[in-house]
Length: 318
Image (cartoon, rainbow, N blue to C red; front, side):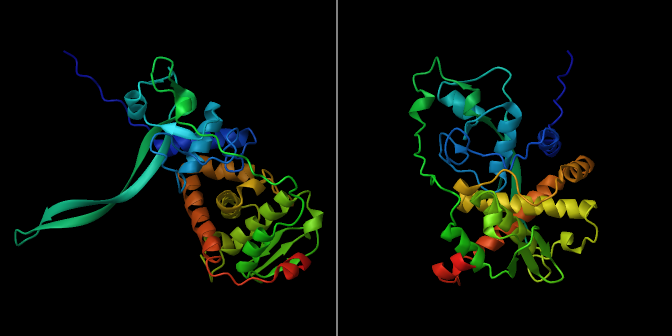
């Protein structure tokens, strides 16, 4: 009797990186796509447990949705679907998300004593978008689990938003307004931005500002990123730093100001070619960029825990 061969494990890093490269080649930035399109601002989450995905997992869900043509922010495991009497539609592709934690392992020391060792772990888990689930033959219906949220997005986004102005001011970054370029100078530790009125929208102005603040976090006095040491705008280190700043802006805006997300930054060159070159050479590069961007976003948000802001009138006049 022939032995059954084990299936070759899926390289999740390669799979997700290939999906990202395909989207970038189509001109789609998955971190700039509205991650909850069709469901207002519902965060990616497990439909049954209501566990809201955090860290890089919302991005992996967005990449999976964009790749497979799904819209739902709700996901479920194969077992959870089976427990509800639901079926995963034939040919459906799962999303891969990562979970990390700490587990305990018993060990025996030289004296014969049993000790417990705490070990950090991370693993990938397969989940399916609810767009892949069929509930026709089940008593429990998917719609019974989904509660629609109201959309309270302001009608006029072209006025200044003081909450975001305060967020920017709380970083205490040196920002000079004027000119027609947005950039960060590591040597002067200074951000330059066009005046607010020169942007096409409030969305573009604030997304660009937070993008440059993303670069600002990389200074040697803060997170000390390698990208700050690049001397050429055309090299891979510079392109990687631009990707980190782009993701930082997306993460901050999505966490704090989701209604002000902008899909395209103004006054920035298109770095898709540089990103694709780096990602195709190293299938873990994007994961490193996400990790560094999360640290940058956390740094900016932490600076707002103990705010030191100007008055509202001073902010508007700035």
